[in-house]
Amino acid sequence: MKTAAAILLSITVALFATDARTAEEELEHLIPPGYQPEEAADEKGLWMEFEEMEISLNKSALLIRDPELVNYVNGIVCKVAADYCDDFRVYLVRNPGFNASMTATGMMQIWTGLIVRATSTDEIAAVVGHEIAHYTRMHSLERFRSLKSKMATAGFFDLGLAVLTGISAPIGQATAILSFLSFNREQETEADLLGTRILAEAGYDPHAAYEVWYKILAEEEAAAVKRRKPGLFSQTHPNSIERAEYLRNFVNDRYGPPYSDGTADPELLKILNNHYELLMEDQIDTNRFGRTEEILRRHAEIGVEPGILYYFHGEMYRQRGEDGDNRLAMEAYKKSIEQEKVPAEAYKNLGYLYLKTKDMANAQANFRNYLEAAPDASDRAMIEFYLEDDAR
Image (cartoon, rainbow, N blue to C red; front, side, top):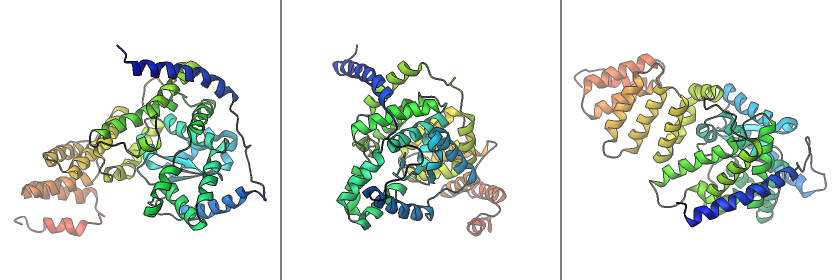
């Protein structure tokens, strides 16, 4: 039996879906492709400051420059953007958070955490479409203009760069960052509806617009097991369940059943298998183990190479360090090295765990396998130290 709250939610969602159908038809882009601000407008000054931010971002060590990864995200953005493709510059930033955003100048940044959390290219495209809708509805300009009016030029520049890259700003600006991250509810609704239309027009599955929300909510639920207060995503994206529900009802009503047949997305799977260590190691280092476990479970479902997944399970257990985790880590590393594709570090870390149990024979055997798999390892001298004396 449904609770009163559940019944009220379903009525609210149904009513919103009816209004959303009308609103979605009325939404249009407020700026054309190739848009430039007027010389006399305050917007021109903002554009100049954004250009400074972009110069700094171009020099950042956090930028991913791998051609396959860059071409993958650029291809998604250009396909979704359609006539606006030439207006955008896309930067893939190494950060484990779930985020993509765009300035009013068309500087889009996508964090690697978005790729890690997706189970299809459609889901990445859904987030991109949402951000493009914010851009063409001029929401990005509105929030930057509001922020600029409250800050000195130097503070605005530092804060803007902090938001773009995820680097922490000065402590006194932390609250401003949290405020900056949030559009108002009307803006988010417009971006949801117009972004879904953009997504469908580009040939992607519009159902991804709500499916990506459910995945983030599942991750939030997994994380909540380890803490008693909402995470950053919940703080900056309130009413996430209601939002996912109204989008699901709207998309099913407007576009019919999902396009996908449930099979894995070969394009995304190739990206994950080829770059998993780069994409996932930052997530491991967050020490948010509930989230990490949920992400690994999801990747197993879509067919990421098991040797890589077992390795990162081992990393998760090793870094968590709870009772019994060393044993779980050893088991995961052992399963990893039984697979066809295995990170060389699986041998090394298994060797160190054997050292802890004073099993020198197995430790050295794994250290030898590590050096054979990674002959140019930067820590070769340290590993050879453990191999110098079998009696050590």
